[in-house]
Image (cartoon, rainbow, N blue to C red; front, side, top):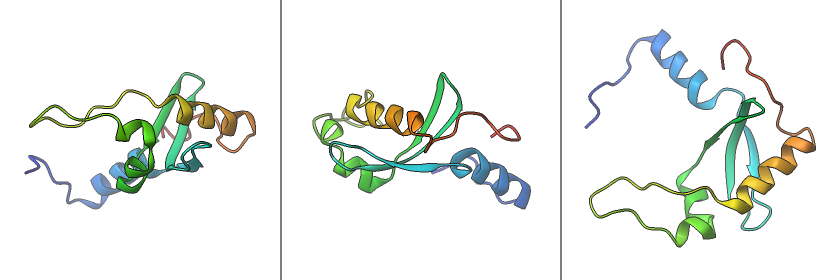
Length: 100
């Protein structure tokens, strides 16, 4: 159970901005898993995975979580290449706006 559940409108808006603002949908050019991506800088990439995208990613299908632990995944090189291509094509802008 969560130890903190946001209830105030300001906190909910901060949560939305932090997790979903400016996300651009990018599809892996290999398995077609779709993730939300934003780049606040050249070196910072935020990726939001859905349950469906995790199920579609062939790289993640080969990995498993420690028993009783939370799943931790190494980066998928095919998705990383797809994101880099989307950045080069201008589909994913670089730079934070208003701290997000």
